[in-house]
Image (cartoon, rainbow, N blue to C red; front, side):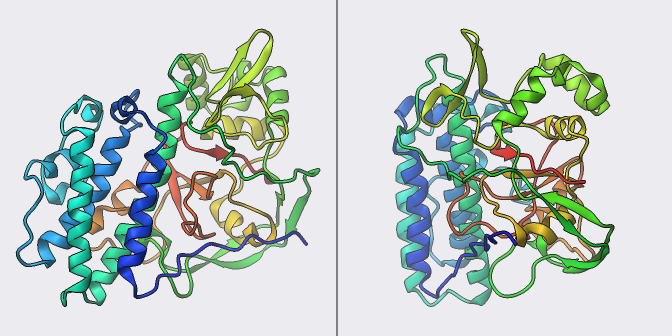
Length: 396
């Protein structure tokens, strides 16, 4: 039996001020290695400028906690609701996502003043008599929301620096979780009725609720992630030139983008290099392959004569292998669990309205903040995106 990686649920205490400060400060620490110019760049629609992440997560607490619940609170700037609202139709108009990189104002210094102002007011709020159980749940959601954006911060920073022609490093030290790689083994699970979904105490998102039974046929799943060496074999075998391994939409993506490798791989002077958060390096063949989209993951699996696991298979099997190095593609569409109901108001827009044209990712990655992973966590992305820290686990 393999070593089990237990979920790192946040153990929230009633000391909300301490937990709030700890998580909010971590966002600032992630940005500390940046130059001022790095805060504003938006190379593609999927990447938001780092300063926008800092402003948006602050806007969440101002909009959902302070304004409606702290009498006498005055907003920092009336225009910031338009600038930092992400997708909440209930809250009103907003800057469209493609234009976030055009916002030279508010300046980076203004956004840090905004964070300081809201953090001080939240500190006052925690000492007031206005905090109640329902607001504690909303604060907990806001802190988990901030942790989601901390992961996106690292992901977006890597894309910004990784598409700079100088390939500047984010940090010289290694932040990767080095797993000792062994020969992969397939773990067998018998057919039967299993249960999936969040169960127990602690925080989870609404899309994890509704624990329910699923019937699974007998299946096997690998105890190891696919490595760079294995994926390089796929490339050298002509995997990107053979339509037989690809979904039709995936094959169109290959042709339209002239795709030949994972994101951040560069073939220079007859050898493969990889842009990492430490800068441009030779590919580590033993490291788990990263930054591949669903099309690539599925094509690789087909080339190996295997498939991707479903999210139910992944969750059932997750206690029998180590996970947390890469977000792992599944072969499951992002759909509601039985009994799922969207909450009223803006909070109800958090997950439910995205349950179409998205594919489930399971696990977590080296970019996931400590305490923000569960084996029931349902991450989701469109099939063509490579920029997240994604990897492959095979099933059959």
